[in-house]
Image (tube, rainbow, N blue to C red; front, side, top):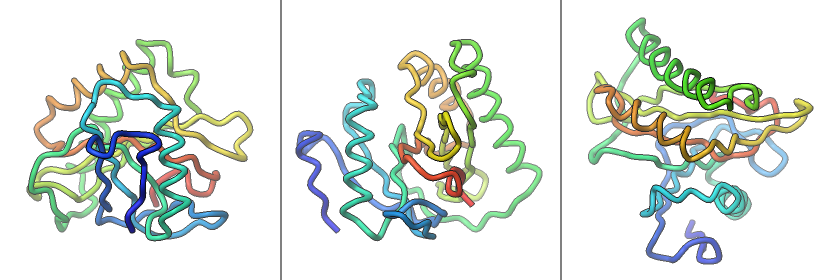
Length: 187
């Protein structure tokens, strides 16, 4: 489904595609098991979270084939689905990335603003030894609704810089979907 986001971005400054891995996510008032949309922007350094939030809502409203929107921070060429399993090595990868995120949130005084943070290891990569990572920090005041956390540019840049140094991360995404509590994570 072609979605016009020209009210948010210049037509040549973005692209949309589906991540070929399903997750539980929001679609209208229902939770569904569908594909996330990957939003890629050519301008990576100037994230306008409010604009991204509106674009995410429009994508979910207009495309019933997807149930989440993830922002591409970076992605190596030739990523594809890999057969991977839950192993100690993959769990260690999650722990390593999660530590980077939590440490940066604490260092930049944003940790207490976060209700919950998920680091998702996705089997979409260039090789079986690598992965994609989705960052999912959320805020919630009443646990009835959840919004993605709008981290400061400094915090996000520090996180990205450190994760890019890890040889096992072929792509990094940031979940910009607002959800109900049942679909906070990526079951």
